[in-house]
Image (cartoon, rainbow, N blue to C red; front, side, top):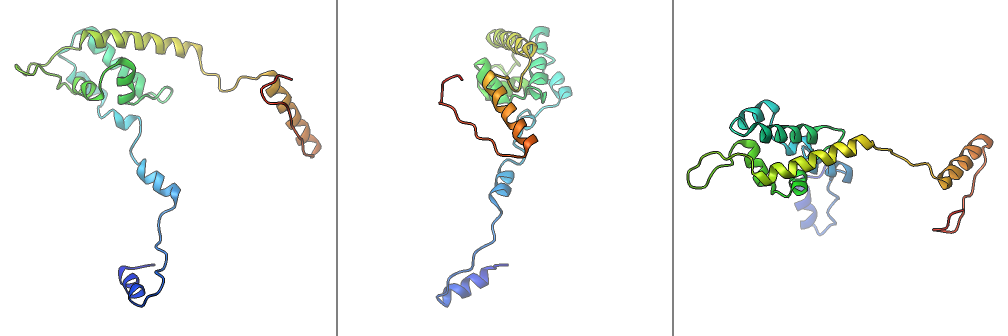
Length: 172
């Protein structure tokens, strides 16, 4: 292990300083991303949201709660700032609305969900539900892909290498 005194001693003697142990790149990336998850971008619980949004109109409250539950679902994760981009609202404004701190600047009275936000949330919900109905196909088997998989299967069976070559961008 390298200590500060061993580094000072090496430098005073004019020697090359020993390498300092550093975490691997993968470990550093893990430390940087620690806690930076989709769910962490939504610093609310459903119970807290129900309390914070109790002053809102029933439709506004329902849309905001639906968006929250949709976005934290692992099937279609969406961070708070990404939702803001999709509905055309700043992340800070959405946070104020969700935390119940969206107030009139003069009277400090809590405001209802803006009409434009409700319109955008309706559109967002309609689009997301339509996408969910279509499903997500992870891989589309094209004729070219079928030939490649067949060649690989034959190579695996015969225990021999396979060479795949083709002119780029031209269908066989």
